[in-house]
Amino acid sequence: MRVILVFVDGLGIGKEDPEVNPMFSSRLPLLSELCGGKLPSSQHKQFNSQRSVLIPVNATLGVPALPQSGTGQAAIFTGVNAAKTFGKHFGPYPPLMLHPIIGEKNIFRRLTDRGKRATFTNAFPKRFFEYTESGTRRLTVTTLAWMMSGFKLLTAEALQENRAISADFTRDKWPELGHPEIEPTTCEEAGEHLWNIARDNDFTLFEYWLTDHAGHSQKKEFAVEVLERLDLFLSGFFRNFDFDDSLFVLVSDHGNIEDLSTKSHSRNPVPCILAGNKSHEASQRIKSLVHITPTILSVLS
Image (cartoon, rainbow, N blue to C red; front, side):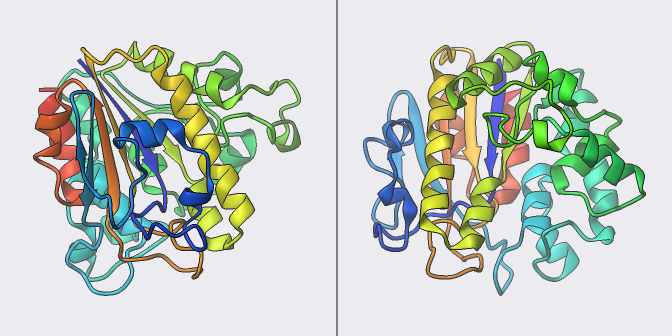
């Protein structure tokens, strides 16, 4: 049994209105199929079938104001209500006060302590490593959790060997980032690479943050491109997906891209899409962001 978690930053369940919600101006056949032939919206928040489940998840964590990435992602990847612990929503990076919790409670550490194989598939260019070596503590929850668990982030070499995934799927920007040896690929091929990586691990994480950037930009064309790339990526992933011995989970930390009428985040619920073995059982356990890690730990126990 394996679990693949695709974390999509800044994707909420919004109105079925193409004027403000780019999901309804985009071609998203795979996401639509997983959600019962309709995309997630305030009119279509839940769906159950033999192969997949859609549920709405509360991203507010019981705290006023707009959810933020630092505390929201900490809740997802530790199971701790980080916003309540810190006293408010905070982002985009987790506050220093939460670093010990992230280091101790993160899903990578808890799984590997149980003898499970876990991987964080995002590839990072050498510029990022120069940035981290400068001593910065401004790291996202995922990178911080992985590094605090004693693991090294994946490099351009891993990407070139298809052992890692580019944040944009297609690797178009890598030559500009100092890696002329990196050749482009398609979104679908990147999805196939993710499945190939996942086959050798108990838990696999990929983080897609361009959705949040597109939401903040309020640029509809950019938002549509980002969403359609995600759908193509998932189409490639599901070509060989083993529904009998794998669980796929897609979840977000807060709303954003679903409402381009504002630059800020939203308090909308976020979609959680599950597919494969134990998808119904897992969906019954998830009501809030804090339930993601405990649910995955239970599935892999």
